[in-house]
Length: 611
Ligand SMILES: OC[C@H]1O[C@H](O[C@H]2O[C@H](CO)[C@@H](O)[C@H](O)[C@H]2O)[C@H](O)[C@@H](O)[C@@H]1O
Image (cartoon, rainbow, N blue to C red):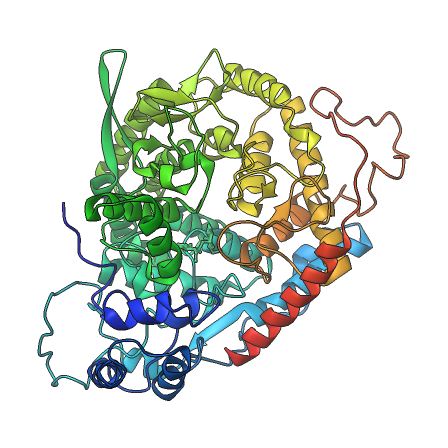
């Protein structure tokens, strides 16, 4: 298949200008250029660029390009204006249930952070947005109103309501991040903000047919883990706003449909065929926001255009998974060894995606039941049942005691530890809860993952990629903790609490030492932040804050800031769970982490103010 570029803009998504600016590495972070607003319509910007190329025989110096860029573009983030959320309150009720006073104060500071992470678009963004700019046309067309008047000056996707963003270089909404952000906002009682964010997503599904990876046109041809329905469920649980559900149920159904029609493949297991989903992207070319990284690695490793295109597709499919990048998507001789050039994301059937899709179907049953539309609730019940059959047949392994990703290229299970191996416990995607939980607990014991004192690592592979060892990510801690806690098993629930203690204390230590909340942490160093991958560690940080707020809320009656590993517990008969706990003494966080933290924090706040 030959796909169009990631969007129709020949400034932001493909073309000579993008290629020249990105390959000359004018900006340290490739995302900077594609987030900059044009001062003039694209045709005028491109005309000036052509003139520069002619003047310099197609080889402008860095200085000439820098001059061109500062003359024709505004700095990244200039589409936003200051926004004070009207529903923000100083002391949301959830704080009152946190018994530890240090943690209560921290929860209060996290509530304050929403004000730094809120973004509202200037009205002019909506006026200049061409809604269908993502639909690629090979040649310019005359749009109603004449060329120039309605041309895209921005890469931002216009949304009518303000959003809470992850932070740092992530200046726009991100699809799956928004789930944990919304859960935090609901604890902060910011119901209007949440309703606005959901309203934004609904308008995007209506106009674009799916929710892009993030709020930029260059993300439009790939999505991220399908969390819109769980977001709606969270909002409904907090508000019972049935009218909002009734008004938008068709859109929720459409989002589910997008995954069912665009991402499914058929797999044969023991002579039976099953339908399951995997990640994929529908565009050609490198990621515009990581253009230099993709083109350079492709040129070094591959000789033909066809090979390079296949590689770009794997990179974008991995970005759609939210795990960009990870050895989880490498296939080399049917193993997880290799490097980025071994990415085969499209051939791997992931446990988390498929258990989330099961959850989506079950939520549609729930939503239609609430609306008394029996025909539809029956329809989604049978889809959910079928999906559960498929997940169990293809992804559950009795002999391992876990769900595992499936390699459809080599038709083998991928027997590697990932926190997502227990995602079905989180989404309720299991058949025989008691037996499966018992086996899962033994599996976790065998992996010795609690030997990591800063949190649960993403994988056990040291690849240098950011979704690998030793990084620990907030959504993955959440999936494991909530999954284990959902069971009726005492041992599993106790383990969920111990994981919570470690995670919360590690985030708290980092916050105390550096004043920052990070996008990811170091599983091996309590209080240490993560690293690796293709961009610098970011602070802010939307999903991190949301996860901590929820854990402080859920376990607030017994969580303490004091660390049991360094100060003995005074509770009678209390013992850490030695069946899974094989922890060594806790190393202290390094000076390097502290310094990086200060620099990162400074950069975020400066960027926030500029934005
Ligand atoms: O610019 C590189 C990549 O950055 C994003 O991915 C990371 O940040 C996101 C926002 O927090 C998060 O959702 C994702 O899981 C992270 O890996 C972006 O989503 C990628 O598409 C992009 O190529």
